[in-house]
Length: 199
Image (cartoon, rainbow, N blue to C red; front, side, top):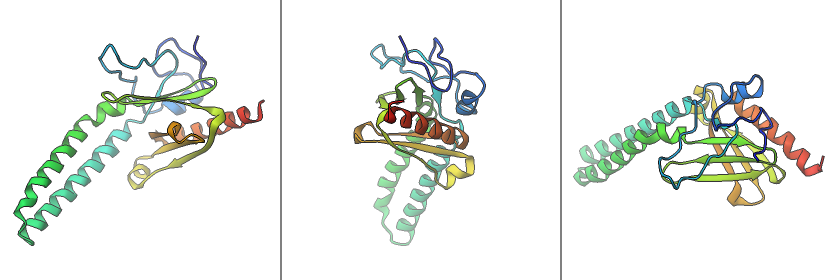
């Protein structure tokens, strides 16, 4: 038996819900469903309402990757033409290839990120090859923090950091819309206070 999502009714499949209210805020501008690995030995998502990151998260990640590529290219050109370090082309090419490979898999990685609000905890999952599924009990939440960098602000997204007493269970949910991050923060703080006071 699965636990219900505090912000929306439970559903029989791990896809987004279109219910009014909180679900509209949490699911606005996100992907349609969490992508699972094709392997039979994958970690199961289970039933219930899964929320995903904003589609703008992919754009921000690709722009960030493009900026890193530009820095690598400029540094290599300066080293070769001004310092005459021709050997720099080899590490620059390796770094650029790794960054291009990372950018190529970014859209699929983003679609593997999801979180689910259950009755007693928040479950966060990410990863295709290296999968991670973390359960964060509401009663152990100590801090819920919203952060965003310059690119994030420009595209209206943020990341939500959940801090617990156990460092291993801390979670950072990236790529949330600003509205979703604020709504999720408020819900988590309210539920955490209720769990701690035993109401």
